[in-house]
Length: 229
Image 1 (spheres, rainbow, N blue to C red):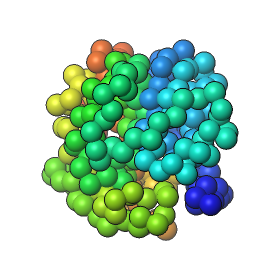
Image 2 (tube, rainbow, N blue to C red; image 1 turned 90 degrees about the horizontal axis):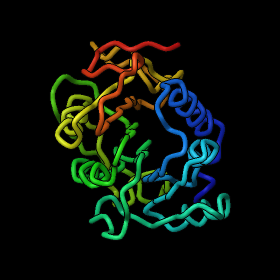
Image 3 (cartoon, helix red, strand yellow; image 1 turned 45 degrees about the horizontal axis):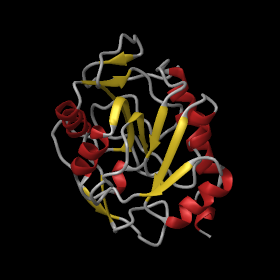
Image 4 (cartoon, helix red, strand yellow; image 1 turned 45 degrees about the vertical axis):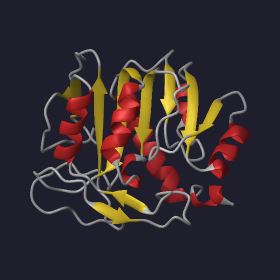
């Protein structure tokens, strides 16, 4: 069953670190409509349900959505392929939550444009990235037989400048947190060589908005050094 790929200690530890970090950013996340794209089996869904949000969960794989439905019967779920056109009947949401999905796409710019159009307040993006001060998408091959990987076999590891500047072209305000989650895949120093870790993956978080945020935990430029707290 596809859900077994998601249910292991390391995967769940990773989820917990990301969620506790998001909670620490003091963003306006309660009582919103939320579009969760690339939701997998819904391990992040309860974060928003507990905040009295109305959540629409999407994923490209039916088997993942079936598992989400068994966990959260009242949550709307939709099979959506971010490599294709977004369905015309999918309404805008206050928040679009795109954690752990962009790097599984061959055309991340197209996907970001689609979900930015569905964002009325906040677009939250967490993705694997490559080190570098240049703009690049950096395609990679992924295993289509693994339901945690790219459905069409090609993903990407874009640089942070590519992501930041792409988001700036789509939404008027883009921020990066001053902090990073307490997990080894989230570097705090983006200068020099990538740190060594077991997976060889490096992740970054972006917050794009339609209205400016007065939040001391966010930087409105692409900073090279972050910290944990």
